[in-house]
Amino acid sequence: MKKVHLNGKRMISKEVTHAYLKRKFDFPDYYGKNLDALWDLLTTLGKDTDIIILHKDCILENLGSYGEALLALFLELPEETDRITVEIR
Image (cartoon, rainbow, N blue to C red):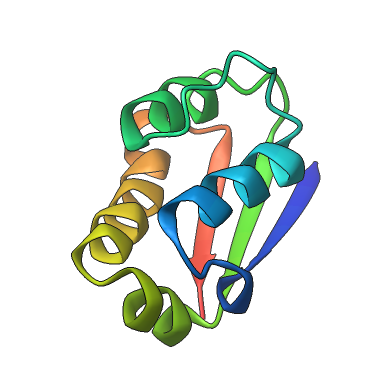
């Protein structure tokens, strides 16, 4: 099982957040850097993956409503695929 730790302190803008997520998940260059593209790639991950999100408060502070939508996306993942677990701290 693959573990991916995401540090909310690193998510300071939409652009920085998507570059960070691309790196952490090793997404291909064609990654669209938006929530729809993120959903598409995460729901088709080939390995069982544990995603641990740290510093939720920083995500909300830095990204506002976009941060709320991002966290909601991650929380929906386990409902879509049993290959992903998500923990938000």
